[in-house]
Structures are given as C-alpha cells and as structure tokens.
Image 1 (cartoon, rainbow, N blue to C red):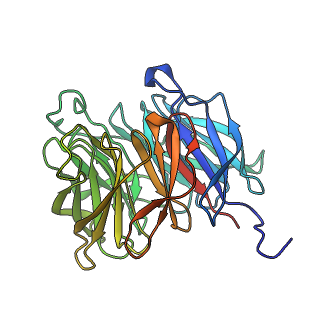
Image 2: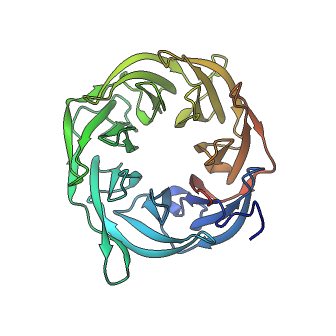
Length: 368
C-alpha cells in the first residue's frame, strides 16, 4: 500500500424520503466516497427497495449502519464492508410506534433509542450478538415511553407529542428528547446495563409556547446545550447540569436575520469541534445561520447567514475532520459542500452540488 493511501476510505451515506405520501423522489440509501482533502462526494453504490430510509447513524464500532424509516414502525440494520463501505441488510426490528424520525446508539453500541414522531413515544431496542452469523441482530423494543403533556398552540404542527430527536449527553448517562408538539425538552437517565430510561427529577423543561423544540446539541467542553426551535426559528441556550440532567434556559435568539419577513422553519443544529461556532439550517430562508458562542456562558451572537445552495436544507452536518459542512437540500434534490473557516466560522462553497433526490440526512464513516 502506497504511503498516504487509506486502508479504508471515508464514506458518506445519504438517507432520503421515497414515498408519494411525502411527495418524495428518493430511491434508497446512496453511498459516496469522500475526498477528505476537497470534501467532495463521489457516487459509489445505492441500496434500493427501501421505504423512507430517512435518518441514518453509524454504530460506535463503525461496523453497522442503522436506518429509521419515516412513517413506518421499524428500524433496520446493515453491516458495513469496510474496504468499500458497501451495505448488507441484516434485518429490521419494531419500534412500538409510528414514524421514527431520529435514532441514536448508546455509547457502547448495545442499545438504540428511537423517537417515534407520529405516536409521541421513545423506544429502546437492544442490539444482540448473533451466534449463527457471528454478527449482530436487532431485537424489537424492550421499553416504550409515552411522552405526556399539553400540546402547543400550533393547530397543525402541535396536535400531540412529536419527539424529533434523540441525543445522548457527553457522559452517556442521559438521553435528551426535544418534543416539537409539546413545547418541551424531556431528559431521561439511561441505564447502560439494561438500556432502560427513567425520568430525571426535573423530567422536562418547558420551551416558549409555540416554539416547537426540534433538535439539540451540546457544547463539547462547557456545561451548555443549545435547543433549536423549529416553529419559531429560534435557538435557546441552556445551562446543563451534568449531575442531575437538568436544563435551565438562559437566552433565546432568532435563527433568521431581522430583515427576513417570509415564512421559514428551523431544521438542524451542529457545533464546531471547539464549541466556538454553532450552525443552524433554515428552511424557507434557505440558509445556514452561523453563530459565535460566548467562551464562558455559551450564549450566541450572529456571525452570518450563508445561502444553503438549494431549497429546504433539512440536514447539515460536518465531515469527520470537521473541515467541511454538508447541506442536504431536500426540495432541490442536492447536497452542497462548504469549506469551514476555523477562525471566523464562515462558510465558502466547495465544488459543485451533488444530485441526490429528496436527501434527508448524511452519515459519515471515517476512513482508517
């Protein structure tokens, strides 16, 4: 092997919506080879005949890819062939609810936690060793937690509980669940031995009425979490108590520029490696908001708004080295790559957009 050549390449997996119910054009999970120097994505394979493989995550040991299937009642698992990133379907498991919008693996990879958006519940599924194949298999949910509370005031988007994300805190001891429908962020203690969830003493923290908490991200060093509110297009900075799992809102700022007067909703939030910059996607304004965080309190100040390069940037994410940020523009069927300036936080388009129908999320497998 030549010096500098990767033993296994860096791979990007792109999930999408596929059904007419979603007015979607997607056709499965797309597999791309990533040029780690240029940030570009080169198509390699596609896994077809899947229904809405919308949210994807790679297991901690990088041997498996999990998919949540929008509007369905199951998740699926694929084995990863490391030399190429190719996928083989291992099986599916029931989540006990409808429309898994998001999932996360426990730090040790033994459990998967799923947000059932349409039925307002959180499911825990085990990952078991499979002696027959020498690999693993998914098991149907062993716990189902129904999220309780009063719906927010929005007559369409807040008729019931709608958990939209699952986030493990940096310690792996807590699971945080933003609930768009109930205007709350729920926090559970996570038992790493059994996989079971238990409410914290606080239980949940209320968001501003009608804000619709959608996604959350932790500061990599400070006891701070940022909540992205979909319906109000705002970001709330919260103090995080790592001992009790309590959240305390400190400040809320708009994710849109003051000059924008149209309709828009917020979608995704990601954080730079050093916690200095926070990025949010806006669907309608079709932009990526860039904020600088206060080095002591984590509160946010706007830096810039960069056009996402397409309509409805549902997902934004960093590559493994966090030198590039990728925007999945769901309604314009493309993925746009931006080079990240580590000093200013600003974004510069890198290369040409990649065509991918109805992209929802991008998950990376780091090369070796």
